[in-house]
Image 1 (cartoon, one colour):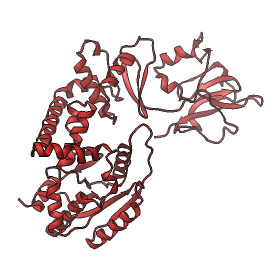
Image 2 (image 1 turned 180 degrees about the horizontal axis):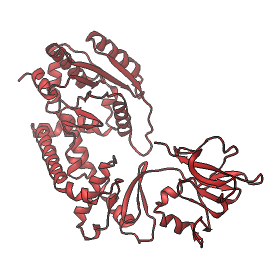
Image 3 (image 1 turned 180 degrees about the vertical axis):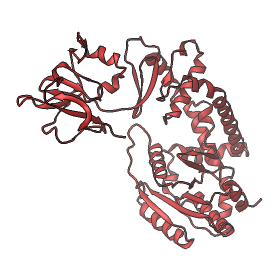
Image 4 (image 1 turned 90 degrees about the vertical axis):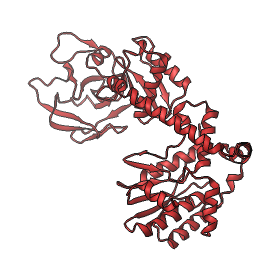
Amino acid sequence: MSAIAQLEQQLAGQQQVLLAYSGGLDSTVLLHQLVQLRVRMPALQLRALHVHHGLSPFADVWVTHCQQQCALWQVPLCVEHVQFDTAGKGVEAAAREARYQVFHHHVQPGEMLLTAQHLDDQCETLLLALKRGSGPAGLSAMPAKMAFGPTYLLRPLLQQRRQQLEAWAAEHQLQWIEDESNRDTRYERNFLRQQVLPLLNTRWPHFAQASARSALLCGEQEQLLDELLAESLAQCLQADGALRIDQFAAMSAARRAALLHRWIASQGGKMPSRDALQRLYDEVIASRRDAVPRLQFGCHEIRRYRQALYWLAVMPSLRQLILPWPVPAQPLSLPGDLGQLIQDPHGIALRLPRHDEPVNIRFQAQGDVHIVGRDRGRSIKKLWQELAIPPWQRERTPMIFYGEHLIAVPGLFVTRDGDAGQRESWRVSWQKQC
């Protein structure tokens, strides 16, 4: 079967395609094949996307090359400039993360994203996973097709060696970019590509194919585990996405780890290391019942509340913030995408503040709270527990104060100090941001 026929079969009738086009050999060959396929499939809508990382002094020249090539082949091209932070990660990882964020932003509904990784790239990915001590999920390397947001990512060249792509480019007299950084063996992939894989391929000419087969087998094992554990995971999930852990003590360590892996993946988290999973169990799951444990994973954290784990974005604390509301007749915007407080005829009724009682919003309170309808007060901690408000939400729940006195928490309670009774009142509600 010809390369064009194989590509048509892989697309399986897909008519909208976005190609990640770097201008290098691999993506140039794939773009050329797609242009040829378009002749056979006139309905094929083809776009290209080039990411300008700004790492090379020749990056602007590469953009010009890509623009000229796409103009020649009548392919619409979008160029996106990115900046990224390498703190806590290498340049390769940071650039890849920035690149895929651009892909997510640009791919359109109904459009399939294509990238040009080939068999030798797959071999490098497997070896890097071995170096990191990855399990079957990491060793499965790159799938030929995978879900990508609301669409799919397809890697049509994953079964082809680089030599095959070079032969195609020579036959069709293609021109492409040579990234000078590919010669820098400080980068892990370049080290493998230039110093390790040539030696392995000399000794074992089919090493790349064998590595790809191992990756495929690891992927199949992961898929089988997904299927076998799907029911157990569903039984542990709450309606809000939290993971119940009341049965974890009776499970084997391997089963716990597998369930945690899949739950974190379902939340959009990256695959945690074995050590990170052990810390999650020791410091969060198995900590004393009255603790408020948490463990951070990048810009997210896992917290436990009432025998369930929650995957949460890390948010700055608002506990020390005092937010004046000088004109309660006007809406008050709250920090941290918390929405706003507004006057609302359907909100809670509060007595009007006196002239010497400035209205302000806080996110913590202390001592006992006497709420309307109760004979005795309760500590604010006990009240939060009674209302089933998790600790991280308590610090992000606006509390209305008159001066130094707690008056109400919109949607939850009014204190005796805020009770309007038969007096003139105003009504307020918390309009949360969707």
